[in-house]
Length: 112
Image 1 (cartoon, rainbow, N blue to C red):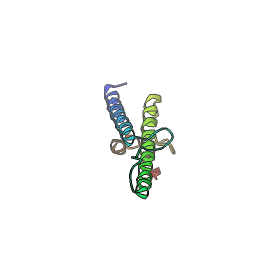
Image 2 (cartoon, rainbow, N blue to C red):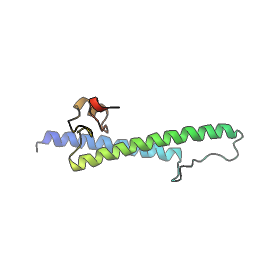
Image 3 (tube, rainbow, N blue to C red):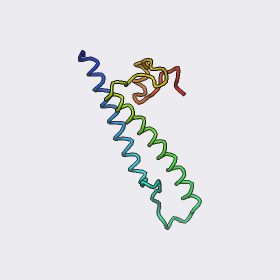
Image 4 (cartoon, one colour):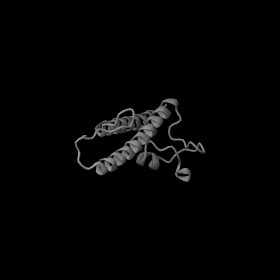
């Protein structure tokens, strides 16, 4: 294997690992527990606002978890050699798309 693809793979791995750490940090900052509950001050006066903020935080946490799952899937694909192939048609995903979205699972034709 030539050094260029290995160097490119190393760069992708590094970017994905950085993204994973960033997403984990954001989830931690939301203070989401395993049971999906969030920490809020119990003395907060407006329970409606607390409920709305909890809903927004849960929605954000779910999006972060989905992104984290995609990043982990991409790292696993790097390990098994299937990174950069569309999960639907198995065709290569364009380099430009992978650069813009390293954790993408689909080629442009199958992006939803």
